[in-house]
Image 1 (tube, rainbow, N blue to C red):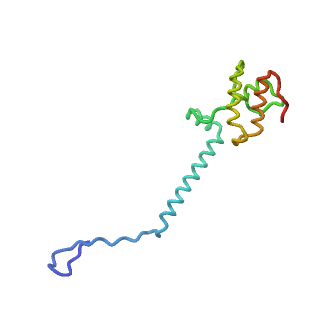
Image 2: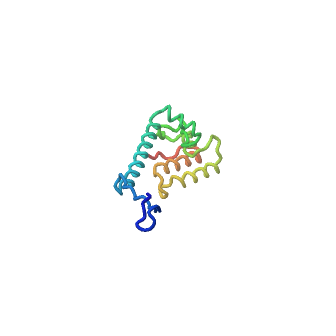
Image 3: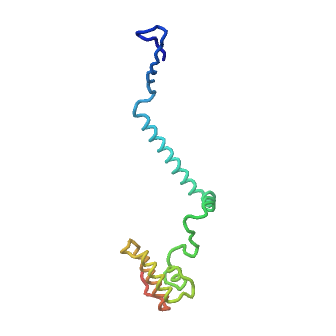
Amino acid sequence: LLVPPRSGHPLLLHLRPNPPHPSPLPPMATPIIAGLSIAAAATALRYAVNFARSSPGLASAARSAAGSGAPRVPRAFAGGFEAEMSRKEALNVLGLREGAKREEIRDAHRKMMRINHPDNGGSTYLATKVNEAKDFLMSGKRGSRIL
């Protein structure tokens, strides 16, 4: 803003800064708007993820495009445990293949018990099944019927 000086030569002009323009928003409006924008973006993302999970074609396309993610569970493991422990189920519980040696059975049992032991937050039921599978494979006959 150019204005004539109060004193001195009348043709000399002094430069004064422009007065600040008043903001059209109240002082707290900017953080509130930013917070609402973040909340809206998070909500939209949540709905997009839920939609992708509920759409079978879209979910499988996303999994195949990602190439990794949650491991796929074979159909052989679906449906829970059998009423009587079988050799096939015992091998599946310990993650072994047919023809596993005693040492492999013992190592697999230790590994599964480290993961599933109730003292480490594991399930008592799963720990029982792991023990039953080891007993079945080590003795060659069915362990005691538990649960």
